[in-house]
Length: 174
Image (cartoon, one colour):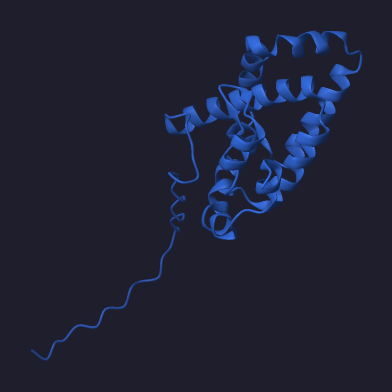
């Protein structure tokens, strides 16, 4: 089975078991201008130096970057992108498939579109930025930038202002 097929044909039980954790973690991300300023200073890894050259030579780079960022934000792909990276560099397809096997289908469909159609020099910049933004935000929220659906715990249900009294039957006949 090819690596790209494994993204499509994965066990549904993992998606059902962990899918809600992906959605909860994705919903926790809070946009911050300070984080964006910090991320803009980040440089691509040395092995991606060619991508910087391609971006410099591409007249439409800024336009493509803005359009693909809109796609990422519209479909909430920041978390799956972060999970697809190692230290800000996209993993090979087969390793991405392993990391994303429990990701919900509604996140995977637009992510596949992104991986297939986004130009490589734009994709590498967006992947690095998403990786850094998500990890900075998570470190601020939880004190730890690492996250995995298999070790994550569901958020506790919020406490209500008023809760109905619990009825207890006591035996007063004794």
